[in-house]
Length: 227
Ligand code: DX5
Ligand code: ZN
Image (cartoon, rainbow, N blue to C red):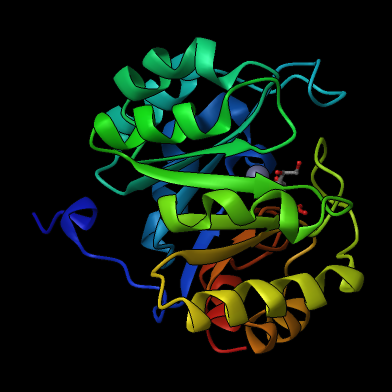
């Protein structure tokens, strides 16, 4: 079978990553397959610890379960205070991209280095209120910058248009320094907001509610792809 993980994803590719957070957790296997069969490129897996954000979702055990039912690329978004402490668990679970927050309590450079040393892609996330300057020292050492378009913690929130200048600045920086990182947006993405985000320079679009809660998931994914 064609292995999606072996593909080389470039920042010029548009990548749609449905968030499992919006799925029916009693049917993780079916919900994963539904997304991939519906045209998803990556599975976005939102890990929340009830401390870094005010919500608890799931941890490495669920990522491992998803890994067993698909060979799709697994994009783990760690909204946890100590990503450094739990890193080995997420690597073992089968995450292909591990994204950590710059605002979390860790040595960011060291965490990113450890992710890459394990042969995984390293993502760095910044909250809506965090300026790009906070991520700048790390931009030459990451595979993806995640610009949160909602305050993290919950699905179903409204897209924050005010984050778009930061996405633009991240794309400009990438161009200027000839760097390869993807730019991901996460929160409130649907076909309409995807248009604004891609115009600003984002290429990886996380979408929870607008895909999983749609009547026709494949059509919803296609509409974001074609936005
Ligand atoms: C928010 C999460 C998002 C969330 C997106 O904290 O990081 O990935 O699942 O959900 P929607 O697409 O519903 O805004
Ligand atoms: Zn997320």
